[in-house]
Amino acid sequence: RYRYVTGVQTCALPIWLSFSAKYTDFPEKDNPHKVSVRMIYDHDHGQALVISLKKGEGLKKHITPVDVMFYILEGTGMVEIGDEVKEVSKDTVIESPARIPHRLFNETSAEFRFLVLKMPKPVNTTKVV
Image (cartoon, rainbow, N blue to C red; front, side, top):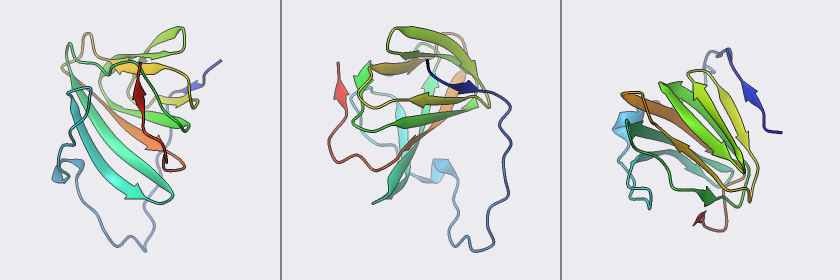
């Protein structure tokens, strides 16, 4: 029911790139999950965040008002969307539909880090369930 894609190819950044920074240059954002969340892009069209989970940490189950795409950057973790739970690892893309409860958690890796893309930018807030 949900798409998981591994081995995603990356592409070069366009020449017109006017700003670049490491994700660690962005401040950690306070959040109800009490984990490392860094907003690396916040625009009218969408948002991008990098979330890092240490071993034993996880997101609380929550519902987003827009579709969300996760791209696993580092480590191995678990994703739960609706009633499905699956192990995911580096270079996996996960599509999570709007208004479906979901969470990601780290049971075994030293660090489980992933990119979160929300398009379009949510107008309503995310709700912890």
